[in-house]
Image (cartoon, rainbow, N blue to C red; front, top):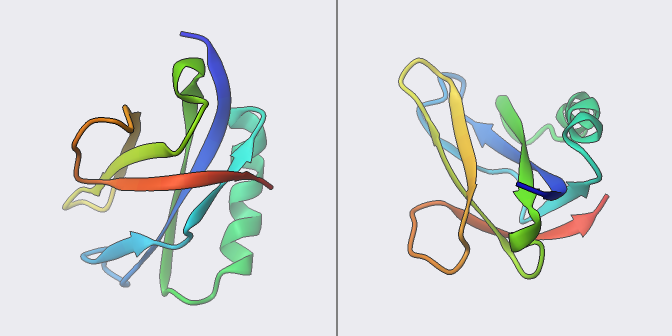
Length: 102
């Protein structure tokens, strides 16, 4: 699978992660997973609206580089963030975000 770019999913959560929401409407776009992961701490320091923040960097396949990127995510009962990029044309229960260069 050819990778076009990476995006960061950033969630703001309650202390116990029982309730989470997207902490950004526009997901930052990065040239690689490594570049994205290096920016996670910076994003955590910038956003003080939530008691708990969670982030995951995701690779976007070249086949999905045009248009919005759809991310399907969930936080498990033990507080782990599970997320993946899905086909933005299909029905899903997740987050669809426009990407921007950060």
